[in-house]
Image (cartoon, rainbow, N blue to C red; front, side, top):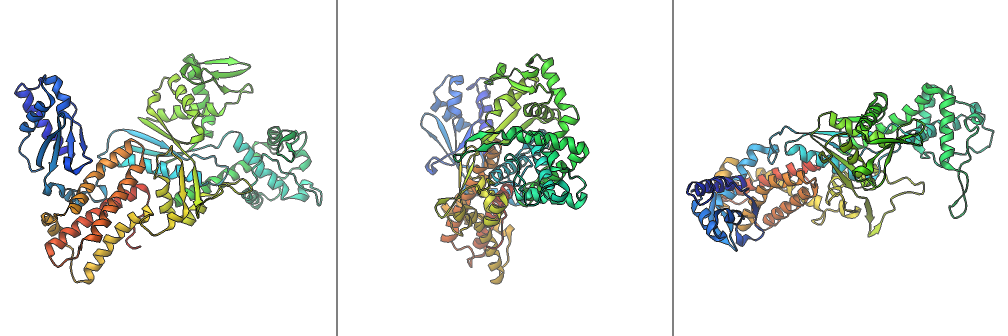
Length: 600
């Protein structure tokens, strides 16, 4: 309808230019908006106000001229001029229901935009592969996947990517933690005295999953990689010791774990150490893949950070910054002049020991993204990464790239509530509640839906009781129930000995004359527009809100109107309207990663 009205207004402008009312070179943008008040019609435009100055006439006069120049059509039943010169359009009744033919013609593709020649990457979750995903990661997963789905639906060539942080110190701590549990599990071979306690580093990974990974190494290598525990801890700085108040009174946990890492690498050699590195990485990454896959989140690319080291990408990125005059040396390290580009301080790229920093990897990774030919890049990060945005964009500018092509979306934290009380997000061991536990309790559909019901930068209070309730207060249930209700209606149709004739229903749409039916048709017309706005704004909640409104309008109409009436043309028309609602709800839920059940 919007396109049809734009065409009418374009024709009117052509007439006014030809008649000399408007300058021949005047071509204003046509803005059309849905009205909020039914009394003001269905659509409104400020075109007369935008054209008045060019015409040298009052807006109301131009509005009169535009309305008089509108060509004859079957789309508009009435046009009114309001206020200083707004033009309000009232759509013809038959036109309101024309959307149903388009819905059935396009089916699952209704609302989608033709493919455009723009490559776009969405990178999301990218949690360190050091433990299972928790409920915070779940929000990033649901939000990122839905944003990617929406962008794909409106025509972008979308690539979904997970950046695997398989390099750096945290992975070294993980590998060493696994090796220590392996040594601990072989007391005889490692020389642990009978009855002696094995003191695990305070800064190591302590979950039971580390013991499981160590056991898998034993299953394949036996005790062949065990080294004497005395050698493992030889010359390692003391671990941190805390007093009753939790204050460190001696030792250094960072120096302690770094010493253990160095000893493990020296004792095992690169090949031996890699056994524990790969065992830990493969196990946890496999768990993450499985968890996300079960959540309906899939990726086109799992990009390894380590490849940036092995293929020289980091050195090349640093060299490019240096060639562009944006680095300097200080105390043996190489620094990036990020303050030149608005950062609060300069950033180290290469430490004085020759090792690249995490930031250097980030610079190389983003250079790699744009070298792969993406027209736009969307990063979805946790809210705690806010400070990284300026420095990464600074690096892109310094590399000679357009930082405006990088959009960074921050995902806020999630609070879980049950029985009116907030659920503690972590256990005594410090492990956050796994995403799997949430999915097992409320199901994938509720989790996917509730995670995207607010803007990403807004905090979410996730009500576990509401998520599993079967009531209209539970939006995901209420929307799914609308879809199932139409399916149930079709089953009942068969038991009554009647058949569905959609063509007859389309031919009888003039029998639909209630305000509720017209409102449903108007709601269906809005779907493509909502889809486009939600995608371009990276705001899935616009779609979830729309589906709630559509379901509410359908339930209200269904509860007040008998669909399966004896009057066959009217019955077929009402069934056809119901089918249109079912199709749009299924399409929308599909993009949100939520099922559209036939029975509930």
